[in-house]
Amino acid sequence: MSRVRNLAILWCICAFPFVFGCGNDDSGSTVQDGDRDADEMAEIEESQPIQGDTDLEEEAAEQEEEVPPPVLEPIAFLSTVEPTLDETFDLDPDGRSCQIHVAAKFDGVGVWIVYNRPDEQNKFDVYATRIACDGQVLVAPFKVNTTDANETEPDLDLDGDRLVFVWQSDNGEQPNNLSIHYRMYSLDGTPQMDEDRVMRPVRNDGEEAINAWMAKVVALPEGRFAIVGAWADPDTISEDNPGKWQVFSQVIDSEGEPLGSVVKPHFDPSTSQVFPDAGTDVFGNLYVAWENDDDQVQYNVIPYGAATPESETPYDTRQENGAAGVDIAAYRAENAPVYLVFTTLGADEGDVMLIDASRKNGGTTNVRLASTAESEHGPVIAVSPDRGAAVYYATQENQGHYLSYVGFRKSGSELETTMDAVHDTSASLPPYQPTITHIKDEIYFMAWSVGNNPDFYIKGAFYDLGSQR
Image (cartoon, rainbow, N blue to C red; front, side, top):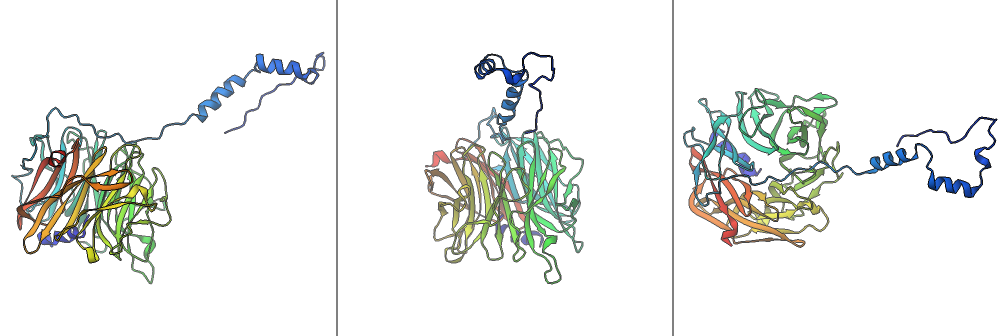
């Protein structure tokens, strides 16, 4: 989530032991075990296993057999409809205007899109729709939230037959006005929860009712999902400290129930952590990134099923000039890189930077995806088996924000772009972060807001980056 995106909302709304006997206590026996000579015993051991040895060996072998870890299966292209390329689709033309904060995911057949649009009281609701690869509507736009507050900044992810939407809610009631909500659906649009649910981080065996916002959701193996956000961490509150925002992760199961306690990627009561994003590798190891008070992007890894992060010290992006906004993506395959993108600040303000986060601090390479005389911001990435793409806004002085995108790949240990960046200057766009999701090969679906304030509408298109090299 970029800094620009979060602030721009104001524009519209303000082994166990075994015991068994080998001897014989019958004093009438003419031969004791100890009377047998060594050769005879060796022959017996080779030709006549003592009863129980075979079963025990087989059981031990079964216990030693490695159980494969749970994994995330890649999203296969199952659509009978080929993507219609380079045509812009209206995603909710009949809905109220001021449609912003869009996110999208491909489920193998259709693309799910979630976004905000206002209600009659000009408070934002969360809406979702699903389209086919030719732009035809598979599930008409519908309202996701049942809570009636100001519901903003939605996100989504999916796996198997489950789809989860998350967002932040502001009820305007102090002191805890901010909360994260979620609701689970099947891929055909059938709700699996009668109403949305407040996500309360589990701490000390109890749920915390405390401010939380900036919600993200990521699929995990075994039907689980991780909800990531920033909360007013109770462990930072003291007489001398009113509290700091800290990034957290809370896992839910396939029915939406919390699993285990909240995990903090890095607890640091000296600074606030905001604008988190998260992604997983194929084994469900959760990569969480955030921005701190010093405008530095840091990240850490929470191993799948772990109660603590991988490192006591977070990894950082090693940028001298600081950074803003983060987005993370990884393809669901073994040894696939985990990519992290952000916008640089300082002397190089406005450059879009990509790193291989899976290499952590061990010689991570990076590449500037965009570095021109213009300023770029709001980058979001999606990945294929061997490549990826970023969509962002390029700003020309006094001329507005333009949709831009570029392809990239990892070549050996280096990252590189695969094409010249495309800048679509046909329309100036509002600065609400766009979205991107991989379809197949080098085809991606992108969506964004377009229009003049406050008449914004969500639009989207399929692009083949392979044809643009």
